[in-house]
Image (cartoon, rainbow, N blue to C red):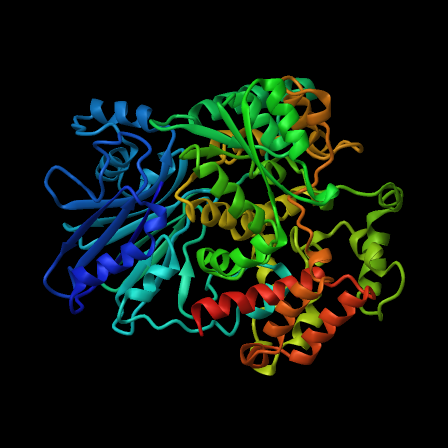
Length: 613
């Protein structure tokens, strides 16, 4: 696990600039660094900088890495879990390997297969390859978006790129400016939902894409996608057996390391299953001193049953608010999922003992674990009404003023395109628009963001449409963003065995009835997990990673912190500041529970202070 930064074109003191860019992300790779600078004119100039966190081949895996003739150079962040099989295939074709690390497999794979190398990789990755023969920069991002890749273009048409946006701050031709279109959808989604980031002109390479940059022109290509079109012939019990075998195989692949490997452990099924299969020496858990915000007792009990050590920490409110500016700095963009905060402290705790952890991200998206995927008994009864009548009622209701039962009728249509935006909905869209100043109301609507994704789901079931949206929007934009940034803030490699191409290839064929059975979400995964886990862990209801922000903002100390931010000059630039303060006052009085809205606005203003003030 590492970080890289680079740019094309000639600038003054480019070696010194490159070093500063790499130093800015030293947290991603504190063990060593490396640099490659070539070209004497704008057309063939390249600068690649690298920071390494040593995991595999500790002595021989330095980067940048070069082809035998020196014409191809690579910087790579991630892990390739099938690199030994690919290595054997490439050796059979005549390639000579000088190391036993996965980076060299991508390098020779590119020489052999060109842009098609991404289709062969099983793992998490973002990389950039410079091919001097064709004067082409080629790069890619893994299928799920586990590892980040950002890029922007200078006024002279040159490309700046890297693992984190903050490294761009040290390039003399980059000026940080707020993307005026990002704030409106953020208030609803709670994360940066656009391809263009909160930094104007800075973009995320989408998951499952590769790019080429040649002669000042960039092209992007999608090389992989989820396919729900085919269904398994396996019975429910056979499918559970298949899942259990695949999870064991994926965990075995993800545990390959030359350093210590542990696991994150909550009280839920996802991380508990991974832990029970991995059987690490150490597990790590965090919680708060509020009963319903603490699963550490369940985690500790499971660790004791498994005979492994459990390290746990209870976090205070003061610790969270003191660390929050640092958290938003590491996040690169505003992200108001409250679980980012305990995840930061969880990674900090784990790094005191191990360098690599396995975690349970992705199971909810793949196997349908979220409550929003399920239906209430009343909704199931309502859906016995013929679909054309329900859709007609929903169409009529959508044009009427709000009334009791309005949302129920809309959801009862069975058309998620009209109501489901993913696992977070903070400010309803009309409220988000009303609380913003005019200049910032012009960003894309929620429909603008979701419609291109839903366009690819025609013919799928209602559940699969929701899953596909979350796999393409919520998972990379929220879950995986915070997983990468919070772990790398502490130089910790986080691996996610559920988010594996082989796991997905089987899971995408499961019928909806195996995932949601009327009693449980991700039912077939729970059945599979129950082969390894006790009933209490396999069937425990999902809690997420709850954070007591509602209680915090009712206390004077944290109310005042938020009020100071809401009455600042920055707040007045973007928001109706009086409306923000009213949200806060109404919450403190107990009249309305506004904690998520308060936290989302507070997060943006905290981020803004880190990068723009």
